[in-house]
Length: 215
Length: 215
DNA sequence: GACGCAATACTCCCAATGGAGTAATTTTCA
DNA sequence: TGAAAATTACTCCATTGGGAGTATTGCGTC
Image 1 (tube, protein in one colour):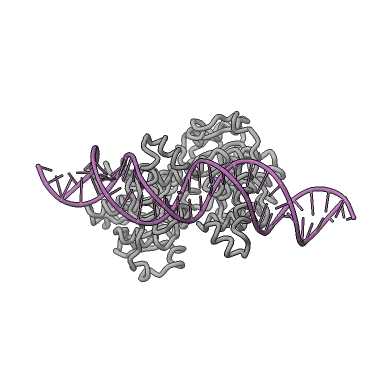
Image 2: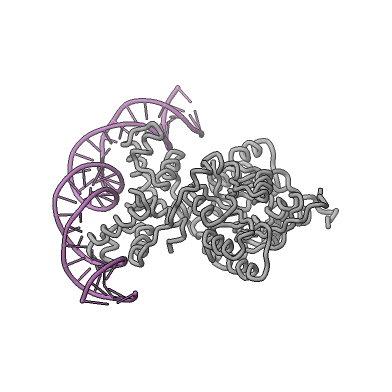
């Protein structure tokens, strides 16, 4: 059902699950004027591609094995602000949605959203709207989401160590694995507790999980 | 590429993400003789359907909003042992794969698996093999996965305390909250570590989460 | 009423974690 | 190239957690 007087809209998908990409292919193919330009299962490949190329819409998973979507979105929007970025995620935590929108995303879609809902969001985002998929919309007020929220910014090493802690490894094991002193692990651990504003590593892990900083 | 002298293989998909279902539709449509019979985004709907109907293959997500796949698989296999159940999941935790296989699943696929890998697994499962997707296979030895694994049986109090620990509360806080001695909390904590066969409470929490013992 | 089990509470001892600093070296990037 | 940030490593001290054991009370149930 192509409308000849409107140009095609190119879409790029970033998600570490090939099956999810297959799913979005279906959704995109059912959308008017939408053409899938490329897809990626890693943040790095996507970044390399975006150095040279562009797209009209990027569907961006926020939890990727080699990077976090919030950061990715921020960087992309700095270089190519005209691109419409729609975050896709499992998480309906208020703070992470906030973070994503404040990083310049044009919308936030849950992976539990129906294809029709996704297409409607894409269409509205193209028209300049900031969009939330239905379930997110029913949970949060878009206006209220514009208050500032602080997700701690972790360094690579800190994220790496937090992930190991979250897997149940002790400082000594982590030190051995990373060829550093247990005392250094202790330092990172302390920094993590500070950044998450808690004195309990289990709480830090929980927050990190919510914010999508794990895995 | 249908082969007329072989009958069609009916597939049912259970996953709470419509996009993932769309993806599996693509994968199934590219498979020889595979026909998608139905799909569900909730455990309950699936169970109701399976009371009256059957299928050759069930692709079963293990994390569902209203149930856990391990239990679902066990129940399904009791009623209809001929059905080939392939678990699909994000988790590559040894213990959960073990648990799934011991609940009668015919295989375990990661959501990060490539479509070709998934089709190959389906084909081999149809031939009677117990299959693991490529990445799982490289991590674990199938034989080793057949050692018995058990979900620990927790008492009410233990589950209650584990939940509080998982929320990041310390023994002292828990004691205060439950009007018991911190030493009693310590005893329960020790019992939990024993039952989960670990010396690290984070690992106990992770296992409990996987087994659906939390919240 | 005897038995099993859950829940309670304690002992001693040692290892691990958390709090608060200081500081050198290496990487990153403007 | 120079400044800022990240990574490394340490000190001292207090609190918490983990290992191993013992023991009492109370509640179902067979």
